[in-house]
Amino acid sequence: MTTLSVIVDPILSHASPGIGRYTEELTRELIRVAPPDCDVTGIVSASSDDDYARLEMLLPGLGHLSKGRLGRREQSAAWRLGVGSIRGKGMVHATSLLAPLGKHDRLNNEADQIVVTIHDVAAWTHPELLDPRQVAWQKAMAKRARRYADAVVVPTHSVAAQLGDILNFGDRIRVIGGAVSSKLQLPVDADDRARRLDLPPRYLLSVGALEPRKGIAALIASLAHPDAVELPLLLVGPRGALDIDVAALAAEAGLAPDRVRTRGFLADADLAVALNRATVFVFPSMVEGFGLPIIEAFQLGAPVVHSDDPAALEVSAGAGIAVPLADAEGYPARLAAAIAEVVARPELADQLHFQGIDRAGAFSWQDSALKVWQLHADL
Image (tube, rainbow, N blue to C red):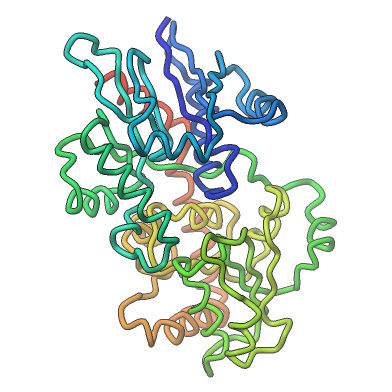
């Protein structure tokens, strides 16, 4: 029996919910499409019994759950120092840089291999927008990956190109994207949920952590521009590592108190309803690795306006309206103009609706999981 061990820690971590969702969806699909005589096991740091039970519930068919002796923070620090490196562990797949990267004898044991995932290069290109501790950890782990990882998965070709310019991974970089969660489906009680969420008849929607790199400040500022549409903005997402004060930004822009409304984290069914009913979905992020919310909005039929960050452009592939990031001072005005155009032209909104649904169909977790299995087979 050939075993692929996946580090499933991100599912339990609240620090990066996007990576947690990525880990959950990919691992579940790796189990489902496992080749004959292959199984998938999980590796997790010391956690509570409830957390272990949750992992087993979320990942049906998981062969085994290997439980560490160190807590998540301690395990992260240890692996950064190279303590607890892989030795004779077989195939290990890390859905982030959280991995036991160390020397292993591939010459005498080809089955010993470790693959890590780097979701974006913001730590190098936009460190001022991140928590300094996060920047330091990512850079340190990436250096260990350069020395010890057998392959590095990235979500887009744009990240692959950027990463290749930053660290010399040679031919070890592989592009394997993500997809929309299987749980993000319109529920049968959509109308009831819309009422409970107090969704306005028409509104702008943005999804993502409330932190500087997501461009939320520029989006809020765009609402005060003379060209802006008079629609409320709903912000959905958790607080980021460097949280921004939404109320203060709205007040500074001179907006009415109810013009910008935060909704925090939404369950999948609620998020699906919010996306489906949005007049325009706006993704103003300044730096991305993949931009999954764009694909989620596409699948639920929302017209999308997004930044021209390279990864966002690659994922959108022309199915949304791209707004240039260059000249940061003028970015809010350009956002306002793009949003206003979609709102004012129903035929454009309809065109974006159908283009988005078509584009979302290009991404699937089955395809991603099969590519991961093939990658490990190639190694």
